[in-house]
Length: 519
Ligand code: 0K2
Ligand code: SF4
Image (spheres, protein in one colour):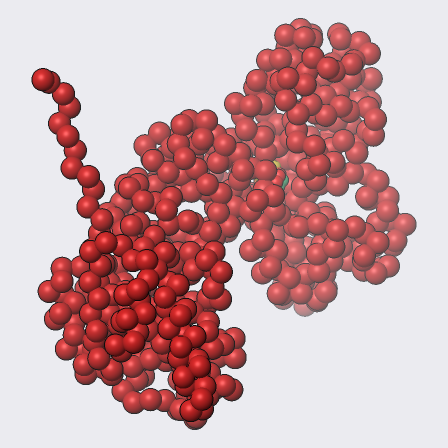
C-alpha cells in the first residue's frame, strides 16, 4: 500500500540537571521533569562542580540546568524567592556562562505563581557572609552560590539555565533553626520548578527567526517621545502628559521614571502647568479646557492624525454626513469625533453599515482611524460603496504609512512562519492589528509586552518564528526577544523587508530648542 512515509516523532530534547547537594537533587528529581532527564549530583563547591562537568557532557545533553539553593544579595531577594541567572560569574567578575533564555524561564515561573528575579549569579569558593556578601552585591550580582560558574562550561554552546531558590539574605541570615525551616521550604519550591523547566526543554530547538521590516517605532511615536524628553529638559520635572503618550507600558514607565506625570484628564494638572497632548490627538474641547485652566500645551499629536482631524473639519463644514471608520472608545477616535460632536458617525464594521441613517445619501464622506487593519477597513468601505454609491473618502489613505507598512511586513513573515510574535501593549490598536492580520493569514500569533510574556509551549515543535512590533514598541524589546529565542538552540536570524521608512516629522515649536542648546 502506497502512502506518505511515516515521520519519526520528534525526540524530546535531553535535559541534564546539575544539582550540587543530595537533597537538592532529590527535590528536583521528584519534580515534573521531561522523561529521560538525567540528574547529576555534582557535590558542593567549585572544584567538585568542575569535575562533574565530565559526567554532564557524557550524558549527551541537549540542554543543561543548574538547580539548587542560594544566598540572596539584594534587599529585593527574599527567602523563598527564585533567582534565574542572566549570567554566571566568578568572584573576580569573570563571566563563565550566559543565559539568554532567563526571561523566558522567569515568565514561565511567574505564571506558576513564584516570586522570581533575573540577574547575575556569582559563584564563590567559600561560603560568603557579612562584608563578603556586601562586596559581591556591589558587583551587581543578585545571588551567590558555589557551583554555577564552574558548571557553565559543561553546557558548552547548549541552552544553559541556572535556577536557584533563596534561603538567606543579608538582612535575614541563617540561624540554626532557620536553616532547617528555610531549607525545607526552599526544597519544596525546587519541587515546584518542574513544569517551567519542562516547558523550557520542550522549547529547545534549532530555529529560523524572521524579522519583519519595518517594525517597532514609527516617526510619529519617535516625535511624541522626543517631545516629552525635550519638555523635561526645558521645563524640568514634573511635565504632565494627558493620557499615555503612546500606547506602550515600557515607554510610559521610562518617561515616568524621568519625571513625566501621566494623567487621565486635565483637572489632574495644576493650573498654569505644562501639559503634553499624546500622539493620538485630542478633541477641540480639550484645547478649550486647557485654555480655561491656563495650561501651557505642547501638542505631540502625530501630524498624520492631525490630517484626519483637518479632513473632519473640512467635510463637516461643507455639510456632508461624515462617517468615521474606527474603534469605539479609542482615544484617536474620541479626538476625531470631537471635531464636530454629533455630526460624525462612528462605523465599526461592515455589518454596521446597514444601520446607518444619513440625511442625504448623495453627500456622504468617510474617514478612518489611522491604525486600522487595511483589509478590514476595505471591507467597510466596500459596504459603504454598496449602500451609498456616491460616497467619497480617502480610500485607505487615512491608514498611515507606518500602520500599512507593518501589516505588509508581518504578512510577509507570516507566509513563512509557524508562529508570529508581535511586541506591543494590549491597548495598542496598531499592534493588535498585526496579530489579527497574521491570524487571518492562518498563522498562530500572539501579542507580547516583552520576552517574559512568551509562553514556552507556543514554541514547542515550532521551527520558524516571525517577529514584529507595533509602532509604539521600542526596538530594544525586539532585540531582547530575538536574543532570548536564539538562546533556545542554534538560530538563524534574517530580515524579511517590504521596504524601508525614511519619514520624520518636525517637532512642535515649543520644544525645538532644548535647554542644553540655549545660551
Ligand atoms: O495603535 P494605537 O492608535 O493604539 O496607538 P499606539 O500604540 O500608541 O501607536 C502609535 C500610534 C499613535 C497614533 O496614531
Ligand atoms: Fe503617526 Fe501612524 Fe505612527 Fe500613529 S502610527 S503616530 S498615525 S505615523
